[in-house]
Length: 106
Length: 119
Image (tube, rainbow over all chains, first blue to last red; front, side, top):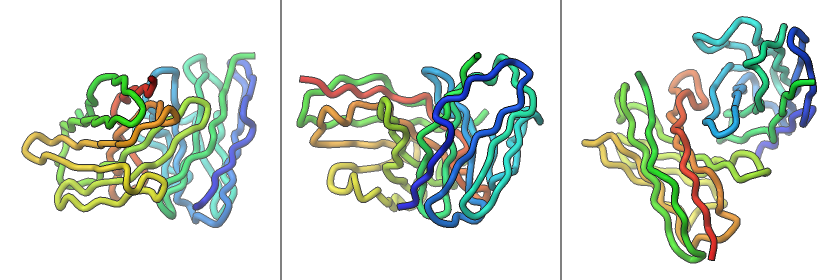
């Protein structure tokens, strides 16, 4: 199985900050990576697929990059609605998720 | 709009089975794989398997083989996931998720079904 490792596990930040979350795959997954946002009690919402393609309707302050084994999700200027937990998911070989990054208000 | 609506919360005893339903609307049900994923508190997401609604073909994750059965009823655009021989560590939120087709991954998720296994 391909293992996905996210860092950090928790990130404290303020409105307006630029933040970056990293996701590493245990083997190359090309760009078969998605990012999801999950709020408490809700289903995940896909933000990005193919490592860098933004979903329709997702604000442009979200961006993704990377290929192979290292990927990043960047939020350029945090808004109050962005405080949530973020997960990466690989779909190169079956489907596995990172353990999540909780983005909390500083 | 495209949506998946799941059945309600369940409480089961160890050794029992649970069957969760997922009703699709807003798209061609038979055209996309339907995945099942669970989120165990504090342990993240686990992919359990998928079913192709058109054919009924399934693939199950190794961990769940022998305990999980995925089926569908195409006239009512509904997928089902049944998990048997329940244990306390099967307590989780179970989601169905629509495959995104050529873009890969999952683009639409159900609202989740809480399954609690307790004696």
